[in-house]
Length: 336
Ligand code: KG4
Image 1: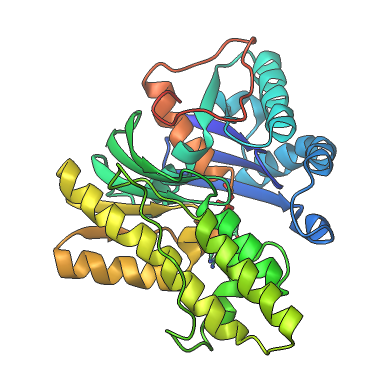
Image 2 (image 1 turned 180 degrees about the horizontal axis):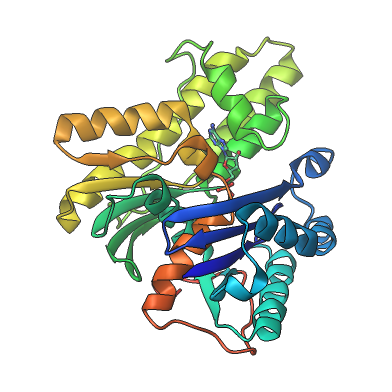
């Protein structure tokens, strides 16, 4: 079945055509990042307005590139949660109208389920169960993926998402938005151990995480340097920061895999593009005997193909929506 997949939860408008959950026929992305960079972060109203402007033309482009006529599309899948509500609403409304006009099913997809499903596209042999570390700009979750549509949260951030923390730290280091990739590049020139940064432990939980203390520590170091006129070793701070984030993520993911009895670990989301986190996961999995799947960089960030992949499995599980489908800013991945 060919699915037209729509994603608009943040600052990327994306439409893809995906066949049977695994074969990407087209994957069009219109990023607004340059525009939001002017403000140092995503401006929600601008995001919604840009989605409105480009979404229909992007869908036409996706169909054209796939070489698929509208009549050949079997269903429309769409991110309906979580995300910036005004942004998500644009995609939901467009997908609803498309499904209504074509007389085909509408499939609601949880955005983070989509991030995890990006791995189904990259790795044809991958099937649940596995342990997923989903790390993006808005979400940080350790998830037991028991089956394609049966997921349980094992751990979550109690405050900021890992990507949000990267973006804030990058900003105080004078790097452009989104800050994850520039931080990654800067960290390559750093010397580890220059700055002593905190690794939070969330009391009462082995798997939950907290990034706000780390973010504040970096902000304070930068402000302190500016006030006292002392030079900041930006590259080393970027490296120590990334190591601290990785130290909070990787050991928890490994412990969760062990607790859940999974032999496979899967990374997902924009922060999974980070070279240090990827290397740490690789090393941990190798040492402890787990199989690791990490998507190629092109499938780490927001895209439509991942929504088409997960949408296929949601459809197979009978999870279709009516024309009363709404969008949600937050939603438990287990309920999604
Ligand atoms: O998955 P994504 O595109 O959007 C959400 O679903 O939230 O993730 C975007 C996040 C941003 O915070 C961005 O700075 C971060 O992913 N990111 C990175 C890297 N590339 C993107 N963070 C760390 N290292 C990277 N190389």
